[in-house]
Length: 220
Image 1 (cartoon, rainbow, N blue to C red):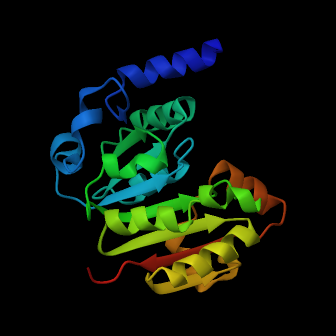
Image 2 (spheres, rainbow, N blue to C red; image 1 turned 30 degrees about the vertical axis):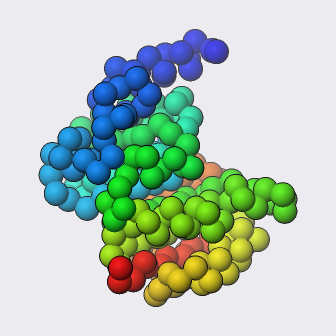
């Protein structure tokens, strides 16, 4: 492990805004995010595979009365988001270090109000389909965790993943599906508030169009 990564892992261990193995809240936080971490009754929004947490941070700045949780398995990436949140004095941000497969161990049914999936690995090969974050096994998790009329968002530059995701979501019973293959020239552009991840900025500057969708769980 490099010295830089070691420093970031030490940062996570000592930071209250990072929930990970070895910390008491890691085993007790399920169903208690509002009471035991945020100390309020505000809505909860997840950014999955958050990386350095650009979306988590950007949304938290835009919506101070909403609680945001970035989820990623990579501790060195989470450390960057954690530091950024601390430097900005954001108290409505947390980072959870875990695999997305285990989300139901950390959130109870209907505890979450929104989920953002921003530029996930497209897992393009057929044998990788089960790893796509819009595969039915993940959609089952999201639908369980989202509250009534909860919102699911997806942004990606990959048209194949996007077409796959639209099809799966339509099959899976989500409602009010809206989508575009060119977000920045769409009426849906205002929804994402102009927040760009590092990769989004890179792809956009190279001339790639950005695909976006949102949908709702509907009544429960």
